[in-house]
Image 1 (cartoon, rainbow, N blue to C red):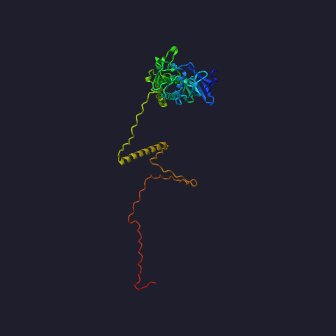
Image 2 (cartoon, rainbow, N blue to C red):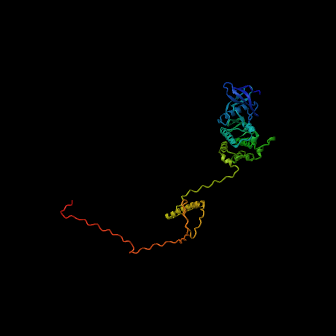
Image 3 (cartoon, rainbow, N blue to C red):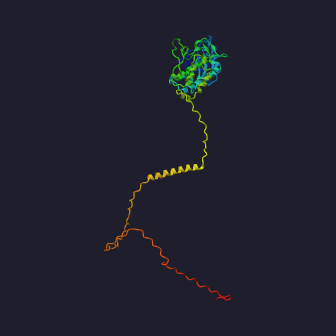
Length: 404
């Protein structure tokens, strides 16, 4: 248990320690009267700002500027003050139940591209709101991205710089985490939104590949000053669109990076799964459109020719059917050829009354020959036809006579 746990700071009772940094400690706390769950960040009493001014004044001004950022991707600042007992300055923020991105990466390893795109776009949206309010984070890294369900929230604006009306400021001090600092931030202390774009590129590179784009920071060495970041696609299966975006974010020249966080968010959302499937396949040219269908040309043929074609087809079908029937029927047995002079077959004799055989040898039957037709008889031999006499005439009565 730390010395601050269980203490009262302002209107807040400190509970367990959540995290500790080089300049501050973060505690889970509750409002003494309302019971709201919050996070209280205590700064060191001997800390000074970039210009050597006491921290309380600069920190309170920073809290005011951060409070003006109203975006779901940025932690909300609720209150700020100075502890009367210890003299330490504190900042009250909304408490986020979850883990930070650094812990998530240590636990699961690299994330899939869809998850990286979703998280990166949400972070870029929050940072675009911060830049619009004139605040540059200067220490954007996985440990300062809290995961609240599916919504990431950027926290710890303790060393953020306020741009005011200027687009960039020079601090003269190198403040931040070297692995995520832009080259111009390391050399000249120039602070502009481009340094946060570089830091977000490092975060996304680490999330999708499982390693940092630059390493070997021992003995004050800063490889991003002299080295070119490797392509993420050489270390993990990454789509060409995301690979190109990360290379632009990690460019040593801030002028060649995306111009704003809004551009980064659009690029992360524009790529589609269909485009990512063909990352290792050459683009296939679309097939040319099919020509419009044309009506078939009509040929004016004589009607008799059409009938002849129809009749030919019908005859061919009939021939095929007859041939199929003939070839499928069994062939009839051949009949014996008749003799030149066939003899008439004898009629079967009745069994009950057989005829007695003649004693004499029957004469041979004459050869079969057609009988001559009888010649017509002469007129004299013909029988005369009897002539019927006419009926007797009917007697007519004389005039004036009446028949009874």
